[in-house]
Amino acid sequence: MDETIAEFIKRTILKIPMNELTTILKAWDFLSENQLQTVNFRQRKESVVQHLIHLCEEKHASISDAAQLDIICEDVDLFDMKQFKNSFKKILQRALKNVTVSFRETEENAVWIRIAWGTQYTKPNQYKPTYVVYYSQTPYAFTSSSMLRRNTPLLGQALTIASKHHQIVKMDLRSRYLDSLKAIVFKQYNQTFETHNSTTPLQERSLGLDINMDSRIIHENIVEKERVQRITQETFGDYPQPQLEFAQYKLETKFKSGLNGSILAEREEPLRCLIKFSSPHLLEALKSLAPAGIADAPLSPLLTCIPNKRMNYFKIRDK
Image 1 (cartoon, rainbow, N blue to C red):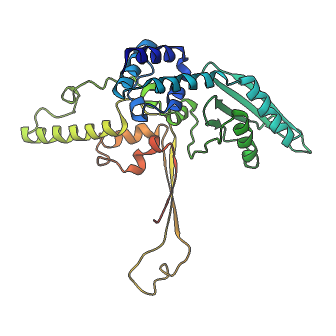
Image 2: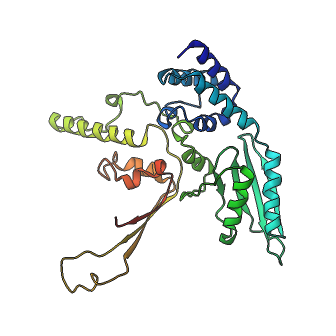
Image 3: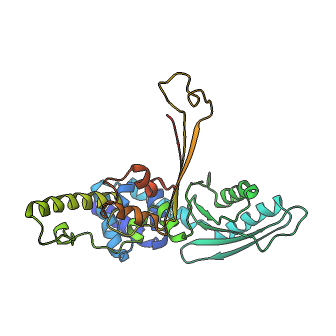
């Protein structure tokens, strides 16, 4: 990559606020998601910029790529929070005569929205409001679970039009911890929660072995524990996990049997089963299963895919 292009990209990135950097880089779509996950956005901005320039050099960024980044930055600057608020409020008030909407902006380029719903004939219920957090320049909004289902389409329409996005993404992901939801949705959990030192060699970690054991058993235990540790690190990373309280799996399957005349085999309706895993910190609990000897490594992809799929509600059907 030419030094002039590198300098231009560097100056462009330096102009971007840190809380908007990830969003803009994803919108640029020049660096892959895997490449962006190698960047520690918790570092000083100068270090982040140097890492990004290095990635751009690896992909041989052209002046056209640099110009595209500059255009995206200009588009972001055009986002008008005041216009978003006015548009959002008008859409709700046109559809529902009785509704109150309040806003509060935060430093993370997000706006908190409180909505008290009424109907054409009843005043807004201030005791059961809906809370929404919207991050500008993204198709994502986080809503509280107290929202009335009948107002879901209207809320989605208001967010879509006011944000000028083609659609607001609906995801099967729930938690009481907004930071964890945000980290999973924006795939920032490997930076936002990073506190562990992943450079410590496995041999230096305590394996909890009895020094009086037979040396052959100790060797086998070390090999197995290192294998489990390696697989666990490859699966979950070496950083604390986002905090979710549960994962729910709904299974629908037809009964299969080689026996003729079986009552269940003649059943047209599928068999349904619901399994729910609960924990104050589910992903950390799953991460600890194999090292604790409670489960074999690797764990089922249905359990380990939660952050990457950005879901903790799953429906499993026959293919």
